[in-house]
Image (cartoon, rainbow, N blue to C red):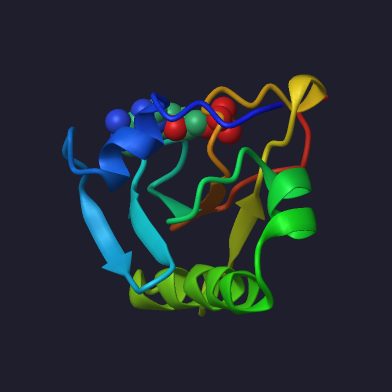
Length: 119
Ligand code: AMP
C-alpha cells in the first residue's frame, strides 16, 4: 500500500490538526488516543511516512527503528505504567482492522487490560 499523505496522523505531524501531546523526539511523536480504550491509551508514531509495521520494519533506517522502540518504552514510563504493566498493539493491514494508515503503536494501561482477544 502506498502512503496517503492526507491521513489524520500525517496532519497531526504537520500540525494541521491538534493532538494531546505526551512526548516527542527527533523521530517520534506520542499523544493520547482521542477515543481511549483503557484508562491510559497512548499512541506512538514515527515522524517518517510509513504505512504500518510491515512498511516500517522493511524500509525505515536503523536509527528510526531504534528511536521508535525507545519512544514506546519512554512513553509508557513517563505515563507511570512500568509498575502496573501495559499492552502494546500495532494493527497492520486489512486483517488487523487498522484504521489509520500511518504506523502507530497503541499503549494500553492504567488498569487490567484483559485477555489478548475477546472470546
Ligand atoms: P487503528 O484502528 O489501530 O488504526 O487505531 C487508530 C486509532 O487512532 C484509534 O484508536 C483512534 O481512536 C485514534 N485516533 C483517530 N484520530 C485521532 C486523533 N485525531 N487524535 C488521537 N487519536 C486518534
